[in-house]
Image (spheres, rainbow, N blue to C red):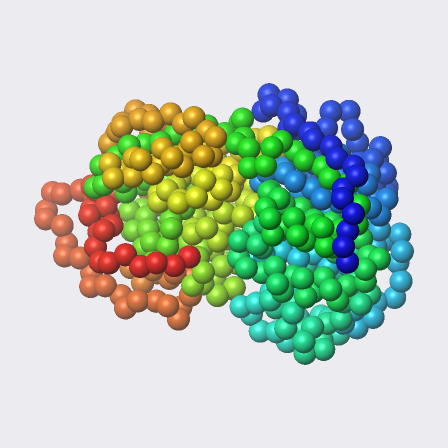
Length: 470
């Protein structure tokens, strides 16, 4: 269905970090959110809307199609969750097997799980039933959930399309459809499946699309499926966050891992990005060997392993997470104080999305990029395209700046046996490697210190050929 051009547009600027990251003087009740939902939000600690929520809620609650553009961490999840739940509760009716009344599409399993975790307490307060659908797990629990009847489905496009094809899911009664991280769906090549799913929803239904950018492929979705949408933007697309400080550490190749171990051993949560799955697994294992409890998140892990590792990071049993770009979009863990690009990304958008895991919703955060001599020109081009002006420092292990970037005493723990460390990094018993032989006892009178552990761990970084992957 061809849609007319948007007729209502607003552009907002997020307040500086000094100000509260909310729409000053605005309340959820004043925006028209039902009292039951306002109370449920208060229980979750959400009392004042952020700018993207204040801008989009009146239109979304009234039933209009909405296109919301906002950078990572701007509060988009509640911006679409609140109107979907409010409208479902206002038109409550009996559930029908396999026929949800609302649909939220997300590009990754992690984001789908996060969205459902955000929505579930609010839905429960309104006596609404939710279900998450994604691949990588057995389909039958999802089929049973569909058969039992559900109000709202949060799904990844591929697995939902499978259920539609097998007749377990029908989208002909969907009243509201949300596309979250639409630009990331385009990057992953999901848009053909997304179009197939949207074509099965009623044309008269409400559609909400949220995206960090409005690239050409996303614009096609907007024009085809949104009717006279209200367009709201918070800051410019992919704009850097003022509360985020950016640093480039120019290091020798052999110093990369001692520097990284020093930063990761500081208090707080640290998220480290690598380019490849192999790199993520190896780095997580070696950080653990160096005494920094670390888990990994990458495309080789099954869903149970992903959930277990992400939970360990969120709950603090592992304070460092090493991830590929699978975690750069949509994964929200509170209080990530430091993001480290162990491998600088190729594209500036990836840099901004990775960095957006810290300094979320008005909080402050630090982003560090490790750069070797051969990466200087690429990193300079990357930061220029990203629109940031980082502070560049040439340093090595023990430099005073490391204590300023990651404040607090360094804490190292005795590493577990190698098999346990590798299971923690790989996340799946099926992928364990054989236990390595135990090292020979140290000579009498020697002691292990944090510097030597990190240094020894750094010498293994570049062994073997480099593999590609996500």
